Image 1 (cartoon, rainbow, N blue to C red):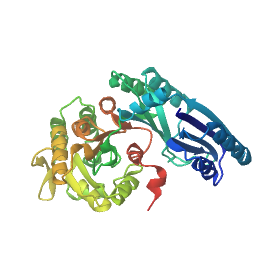
Image 2 (image 1 turned 180 degrees about the vertical axis):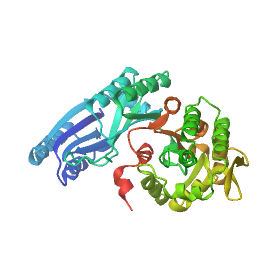
Image 3 (image 1 turned 120 degrees about the vertical axis):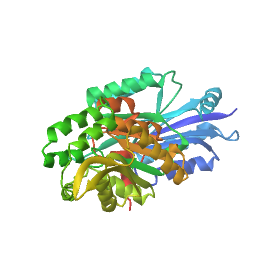
Length: 405
């Protein structure tokens, strides 16, 4: 009769431990059906699911394992598995899996408990939990500290939007960023990342800085906010704001550009994406002068922005060419994907305003970054608690991999 046994090992980790135990299994020609290991603060948790050959008795194998565990100073437990239960478990392989990522400055037991409860309530099972962020010092918790865990879940879910709504509520209550998406082949095959510029790649809105010099900052700020909240058509809001800049000297553009402040983590995420071979671009309703400035500064591949009309060294209050609004952003993203010969599922789009939603919604990975409520509610993934380099974690890249040169 076929014997299937689950072996659970716990205790202080030490070099050669796994080799010693599997060496015993090897002597008995045991087949490894599944294996998983995790080490937290030098303490090991190892699981091995094995099939015992019919020519050997399990009692002899288990006795040898118990003796070796005693010598190693670890605990070992055996659980027989019925063959029909094992086959049912095997049949579950290949079914849809989902990824839930928790991202913040720190992760508390309350946050994790609420997320785990929501997962259980929706009849999903947690299969794997991995820490993507680096180890956190309790003595040196800097302002740039980040904590991220990735949870893999499986099971049938009737209405994913219900769980997504519950996770969004947990985000609102606890401040933890939570993303929830299907684990598919494209997760590790992204090739293109595009960013909005104002309030995403840089702090604030460049047009507000121009308005401040022109003395019309209050009027422009009000129109900007209405546009970003989706309360005003973006094209109309842009036309109104640019009209208020009429007569501003062209040299002000250089002054504002040199004083642009990149958002936290912007240089880090772009440096790593370039190292990994990604194409990177800006698709923005902002202005060409600033987009080109950032392209030269950061080494970006694409920049698509609006163009101010300038005559006799002064801003005329008009725009040149087609206005890049929300729909145009999505159209440009499609075009770049075609030029790069990739599918939209291989693209990533990051933005903060309502006019970013069209490109965020069609990208394979769409991310709302420190976004307005209307954007966060409609985007499947968001970053609100950390810098732009939190995107790397949402892509499934660990801190160890980020630091590799």
